[in-house]
Image (cartoon, rainbow, N blue to C red; front, side):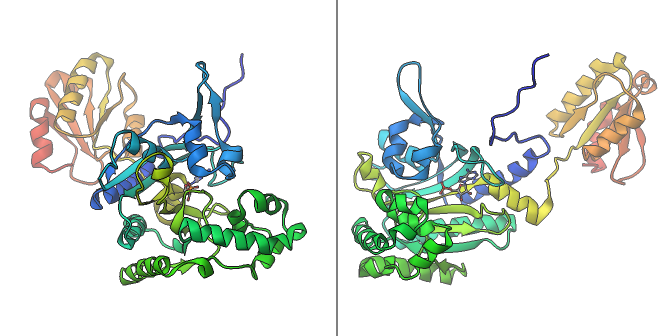
Amino acid sequence: MSAKIQSVKGMNDILPSQSPTWQSVETVLRKVAELYAYQEIRTPVLEKTTLFRQALGEATDIIEKEMYAFEDAGGEHLCMRPENTASVVRAGIQHGLFYHNQIRLWYMGPMFRRDRPQKGRYRQFSQFGMEAIGWPNPEIDAEIIMASAKIWGLLGLQDIRLCLNTLGSNLSRERFKEALVTYLSDYKNELDVDSQRRLKTNPLRILDSKNQRTQDILNQAPQINDFIDSQESDHFAHICDLLTQSSIAFHIDASLVRGLDYYTSTVFEWVTDANGAQNAICGGGRYDGLIALHGGANTPACGFALGLDRLVECYQAQQHGNVTEQLDIYLITLSSNDSSLSTKIGESLRNAGYKTAMNHGAGKLKSQLKKANANGAKIALILGESESTQGVIQVKPLRGQGETQNIATSNLLNFIETNQLL
Ligand code: AMP
């Protein structure tokens, strides 16, 4: 016998017992997108590898080591998308969505990164994102943040904290980068190995270092705030005002840079302690230069991506465990001779809009009733041999809504409706 094949490491199956919880969370995400009048966009899972190289930056973790990239049989360099903002920008330019236009878009789907798997960090994971393209004003940054806050509110989640920062324009970021490199170069040998490498490739990422000695050195380092001009700090102050007016608490974190090259100006992250080391649930910010970088017109943009896997884990931990699916009716047929009659009854119940499961192919009444209860059915319908010859069916309420009764099959729907059994 050959060995059983397992799923790819870091790629999870979402089982029937978990799907209802995912669906509840997804319903809330769609609702929020709708409330803020964002339109859905669906892009392919495979893209040309250069798209992400260009958008995210060569010296980012994703590009350096996490891409599922390959050459296909036609010699094209393709990859499984590691995130979706670059794809949305690609699609928008390709289809002229941004041409003299402002547009609000949302997406949901799987992303792929070949990182080291652990709780909350997977190689296939799902993201939901909202992107507002074409607006430079701070009200849009605030709108994007408020939309994410609305999600936690509607899901009833507590203790998700907002960290906020501004990176300024490309110019101020470059000046800050230069000053940071000059300062850190004096301590080069004391930095952790990754930070030493990043001094050349991506110095801003050093601010993210978890190494204590590196963090001690950073305490005296130049701060991004000192390089931001008055227009940029007004933009940021306005966002902070709008959030305060909306009672959204935030913490300004000068070390928050986010991993990707495309961010400018506002950056933010929502974090929680519910998911262990992988504490970021959602991240986003402005990416005013990305559309021009991909050959579109100079277009401001702002958005976020949230991780569904982490959000679902947080929801289960804080709220309800798993959401269970509820049946309306469980139709039990005790004799296989009556299968065509029960199939007909089953279809008429579904046509009337009742969620109905059937046992198919006989079975013991007791064990079938157990199944009906386990599936959360509100009523069981029992078709035994004597019932079917008399043209009746037994109606057994399972949630204490009255007695078991024999009802003429021709009157079944009417009986269920008039007695409000469902
Ligand atoms: P990013 O695209 O890296 O800004 O991530 C946005 C959000 O996606 C994060 O806050 C996480 O919730 C989620 N996320 C990112 N990478 C992973 C991963 N490997 N596994 C699960 N969720 C992830």
